[in-house]
Image (cartoon, rainbow, N blue to C red; front, side):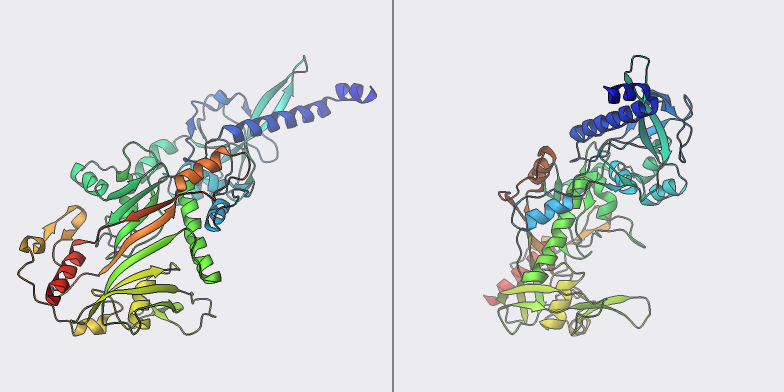
Length: 484
């Protein structure tokens, strides 16, 4: 009884307990209601006062200008660990999703506002324009608690807890988003890109990338997949994101994540694939098959290539290329594993190969073919320059439809037609023909809906196949006709 009387008489103690209760309730409510599968949608507040009293904060807090300063309110923080789930999936199922309980403020802002440039997000934190909602409680005369909200500055590396709410300046809507998002209204270009789609669900988009189209932007590159990705969506504020890369002149299966969580999970799956291959030589859930036409014939019809790769600077002091290194001890050297199998050898000195990269290193297949097998890929002038100096095009058989050889212009400066082994300068003959992935959409649904660690052991595998590009189909027909 004495403890009860002491509690009633101690106003500060009552406020502390009420504040803790209000904060705990808000965090539980936010964590239960948050939908983390799709990037959370910010809510626009007309004024800071709409949330109640956004008053002055202590310990570095800032006075809210009631009725004057509008804020962009982000959804309450509710963490889901996509990397932990990806590890569970890559290990053949089991339980996953038991990840970290906190994350940094800058990561949450980038997830909630994917259209904001990274440089702008970093600038907001430097200028101390990002705030966090601090919940306290006021005790009325009837001893009933009422939530009181204050804004405090938050730094980029501050850890968030479930239920924390961040605020950004509202004028971002008019400035950065419009600047970042490029408007596409050319229906011919939009139809061309969407015609590349192989598969689409809530989590991913899979396309058959044409040769000659860059995946990432850079100096002198106007149109690339990452810039044009918003064309794949009809009415979405979030553009698809790259999950992996294909060389500019390579073609085939390319996967994009439709939201940040699916992209994070796929990134982790690709990383786990490499880690598993280097650890025990196995691949569980991610498989890729490439088709290549090479100059020459490997000594053995099949095998596993294990050759570390390292960057070297060319004589011009600017260009770089990769090469095989005997030792993988140096920090700049990366282990690389490639499995290969001969499909067919041709009397003219060419060989069709199937390539299965167990690791995902830059230019891995091209370097392994040229330097380890001694059979550079047709059209690879970077790693097979010497072999192409003696290049002699093959004659066209009469059975080939000449219409297929006629060059035609496509959107984004692409050209179709030609490029086969009958040309003086053939295109790169490397194509990602097949990819097998776990059903990420189902995995995300389980991760979001389960209160405990979800089981991924029965996830189905999705199989994507991309037909060969025209120049490789022509080369196939030419070599087949010469055998007859």
